[in-house]
Length: 420
Image (tube, rainbow, N blue to C red; front, top):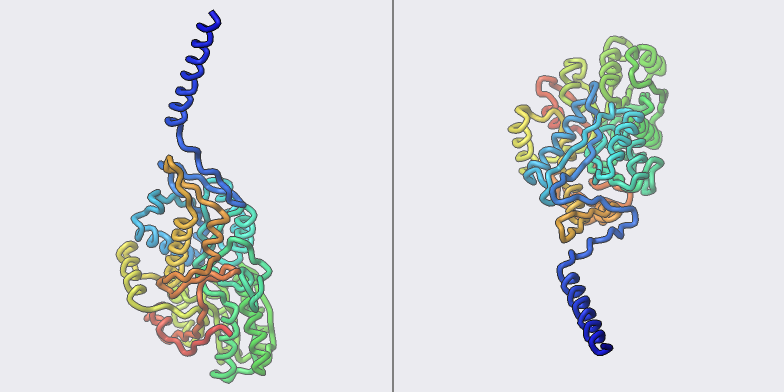
């Protein structure tokens, strides 16, 4: 009897071992485990790849936000609407071009744990709060329009509002104010200047840069003041400019405040000979349409516009898709920002056996920070340790004929300078 039970025992053991071996052969491969230091986004084979979009889509600044989204759409169209074989789902939120709007829009996007990255913002003020929320959540964010120095670097060091994971293809305008000051002092012979900002970090950064450079050149800043966003009555501040006997006014404002400053300045006889210089935010067709002949002789300082076959081709695609010519050139840097982001996502992913994609959040940042040069329509892009990916070059433009529109304005460069 003992022998019989022994045979049965060993037979059962052999059966169990064979079963285990067969089970082992048919079991699924273990899934890839996320080892990224700040986590991963898992995208199943049949799911879309989610991108948050934070742009200013209301008010007079809306054309800038629309241009950003159109640049993104053109970049997606180039890829057939797919990234890594997945359709891209855009969660579009309006920041309203305010700090509060930037924070609220960012919180809506990061509430979805499947969000891979963020495309935005339009306005630098919205980016301050939006990028803080983004960075704390471990995401990456890239803008084709923000240019305030405070967001990335000033004098080669991290700026006050710099955040990990924030990138941009719009040039850092650290030296835009300097270029305006250099032109005003050396070319126009101006010696007494006034500045007006609206307490936005973009406008404040430009006026501070202008003031510092103008003083270094030997000029005098006789008035440095500010208005508030939403102000419409500019006569009091313009009267102060006149009383200070400024022969130049630098006001790098947005619409509609910039419109009000210009049009009301034209109604003050004491400012009839005062030179007016604004920033890149007003290099826009709707501004020219709104102010018309009041802008004749006005100067603007902004990033040098790219040109060449690639730019012409993209402009043709833009007109064919949207049945109108571009009203601003910033859709080009938006297109580059989107392509830079999509390329980084492709490099940051790991594919599981079941087709699920794992995208490491820190890996995505590392790819963008790598500094590997990428050719874009606006030039060679290479992101530094602070998130600046474009090589800055600035021009001073003069509006001579409103009928020629923004294209005529951008073709009428009177001065060009680069960062120092």
